[in-house]
Image 1 (cartoon, rainbow, N blue to C red):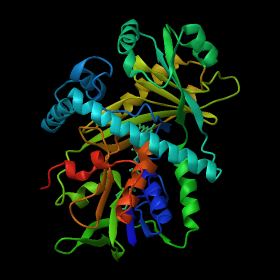
Image 2 (cartoon, helix red, strand yellow):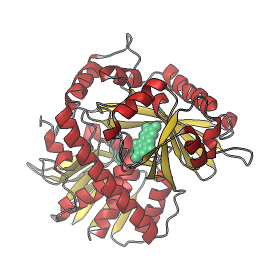
Image 3 (cartoon, protein in one colour):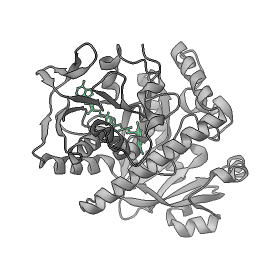
Amino acid sequence: MEVIVVGAGVTGIACAHSLLKHGHRVTFVEEASSPNQGCSFAMNGFLGARSVQMLCTPFAGKAGLASIFAKTRRVGWDVTLGHMRFLRQLANARAHDKWVQDRASLEELARYSVGLIEFLSRLEDINFEQTYGLARVFTNDQAWEQAHKDETSWRGGDWRSVDQSKVLDPALEEVPSMLGSFYMPQELCGNGSYFSKQIQNLNLADPNLTMMYHTKVTGLLKTDSKITGVQTDKGDISADAVVLSNNLGALPLIENIINLPTQVLTGWTVTAPISIENIAPRHTIEFTNKDVLVSRFGNRLRVSGRYWIGEVTHDLSEKVPAELYDSVCELLPHGAVWRDSTHWEGKTLIVPDSLPVCGACDVEGLYLNLCHGVNGWTLSLGCAELIASAISQERCPIDGTAFLPSRFAKK
Ligand SMILES: Cc1cc2nc3c(=O)[nH]c(=O)nc-3n(C[C@H](O)[C@H](O)[C@H](O)COP(=O)(O)OP(=O)(O)OC[C@H]3O[C@@H](n4cnc5c(N)ncnc54)[C@H](O)[C@@H]3O)c2cc1C
């Protein structure tokens, strides 16, 4: 089949790769001049098969919605109606039974996806600055006690005392007031943008791929009941199927087709070089009660952990990276050359259940690969396989029903 994939970020590149492997002819349409110029540019690169993040996690941080408010918006005059509506939907998604089911589906997808990423990188000998192991470090008594009360939800690793944590990663020697950690040896981290650029280079050798950069999709070509291609600023392109993997750019294209309850989630990263004098972590370190995640890419450390739902003001764009910078300077003062750090802001879409929107739409010929929240790189190849299997009318090894766009009401 002729398939158009819109968007050359980590999710679109993965999708094109799976479609080519399933024997389709793919036309890739990207507005920018090169891959990964959107949210995939400087994200954290964490591939937590067991630690996928859900905004609606009932066990996360402080109890109830207060934790989400604290994470997303300091309650104030700028809380909009849209934001309040989203929080209510988020509260419904936190209903325990639903959350347990969603969590299981998301973890299954993440494990499958990360397995495919690992397999592909071994098969094609791709080095993407990967490091194994996540240490979830505690520096607050209440959070430490709470985590031990919820022990059944801490799986895939083991608890380490202060001394054991320091042996595991000597960079933790300098963490003030550390109480211990939970270490997950199989969690993977790497440079997602670097990985997908290499996949893209492999794809370029495939005669079934046509690559169109500097080309913006402005609309969908539609007959009565079927999508037949896309309109672009360079002319129309016909196809048997269209996959939207273009993150925020998909919203104007689908507004008359499906009513997705999306919100824009903004996040920030701070990246600093490591010099030989630094005591840099060898693993990914999550400062669990501080909402700070530090990952290692070759000779750099990258820090993230603050997210914001809705409009972001200029002040906030300055303030949040400064907060992240201050936190990491306190937690790992000699981990990197923090004074030489740069910061970046990225935007991604999220729906209240925190699951991706992935699969066929009710309108024939249209497939969505959107709303990956903060797990887009983790889920990239899994979602790609779900979509390629659906287009090929083949069975995918995992069940993708939980992610189908049809879970949201049609307009
Ligand atoms: C701070 C932060 C940290 C993160 N950390 C992690 C992490 O550790 N692990 C993880 O798994 N995920 C992480 N994420 C999430 C991840 O970055 C995103 O889910 C992922 O990058 C989304 O990829 P994408 O390809 O869908 O979108 P993008 O990378 O935004 O790509 C979309 C592409 O579509 C193009 N486009 C848009 N509209 C059009 C159009 N009309 N026509 C043509 N082209 C168009 C854009 O130019 C862009 O290149 C993080 C996100 C943030 C913000």
